[in-house]
Amino acid sequence: MARQRSEAVAEAMSKAHNIRNMCVIAHVDHGKSTLTDALVYKAGIITEQQAGQRRFTDSLEAEQEKGITIKSSSVSMFYELDDQVLGKSFHE
Image 1 (cartoon, rainbow, N blue to C red):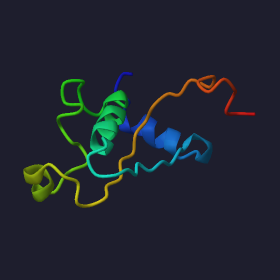
Image 2 (spheres, one colour):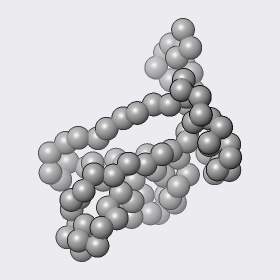
Image 3 (cartoon, rainbow, N blue to C red):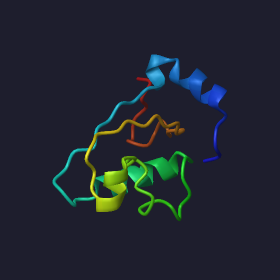
Image 4 (cartoon, rainbow, N blue to C red):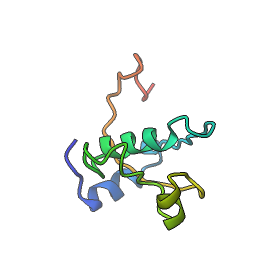
């Protein structure tokens, strides 16, 4: 997906029906940061090379040094979702 201009993202997110909230919870070393990096990559925020290596949500210096997530993070992403991705329309 091409990077979207911030105005287009703000417009899309101003409509409640466009917003999906999710949380990633799992045991230690079960791929939470890797999954989050993959989602951030698919949203066009980081490159494919950075995904899995960047640890985008680990922003604290201690997190970077130790390679562990200490504090929770939030990320806003824009992704064009196919209405038929789950075999049914989201608009029904």
